[in-house]
Amino acid sequence: MLVTPTRDLRKDHDIILKVINAMDILRTLLKEHIRGNNNTLNTNLLDIVKDTIDFAKNFTDRCHHGKEEHVLFPALNDAGMPKDEGPIAVMIREHKQAREIIDRIDSSVEGYKQGRSSINDILQGIEEYIMLIQHHIFKENNILFNIADMMLADKGDEINNAYSKIEHDVMQGKHEYYEHMADALISKLKVDNSMI
Image (cartoon, rainbow, N blue to C red; front, side, top):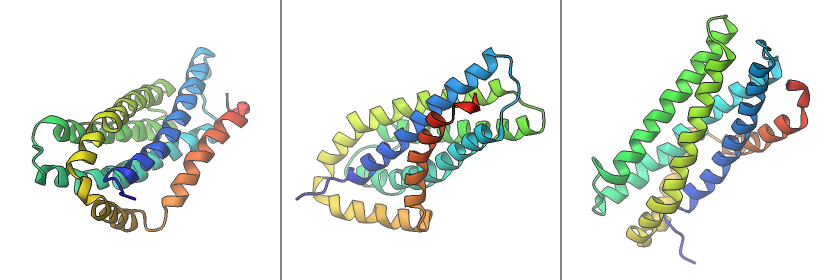
């Protein structure tokens, strides 16, 4: 059976969307804190925010975006897709925006712990990140990846092997850890209503 050049990236998207769903639940909990004039986040909820930041920085950005930026996009460029305009340029710009938002959320969490940031600062970053990543994944899954699967149809095995190398080098055996984290985040947020 022919392996598509985007098979592994689509699997990553499924994992990333689990964390986006967890962040959406988190967003609701943070809004309830704000509506209830509760200016103190309990440690469990703050730990979950930090877990989503860890996931976004390591799995989504370093691993998944690394596969796209170091393997898929250069392969598409070699096949004739321009890298300085069009889909590749848009995706790279959105990767950069995602990094900036996650860094801002991380700074807001640290600022919150030191009394310099509010729950609203954290919430705003989470809302921006959810929106950006949902739209980004939609565009990749429904447009760019379909184009890539056609343009690079004969390179599926080669490209997926290159993804595996990046995953091995970047994740250093932690891919399953982050897959488990994606599942665990939703469970923690749905089960523990005492976080509100």
